[in-house]
Length: 69
Image (cartoon, rainbow, N blue to C red):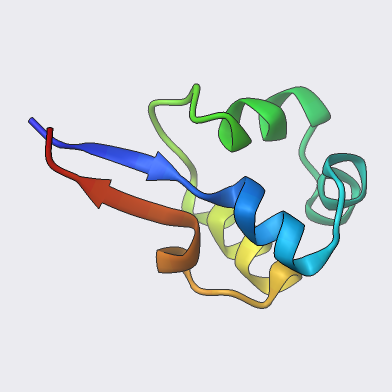
């Protein structure tokens, strides 16, 4: 079974934006954003994904990667 790798940390580094700033701009807690960034989640709301993409000016494919194991 494959898995999804979250690349949010890479996109944030490319955009030079920190966790606190991004969490304030998209309106979710630092804790939840940190869990997302570190791949410790099992689901993400489309509204959250949209907010991240709008703020970071990226596509969902920039944030998520599928890999076979």
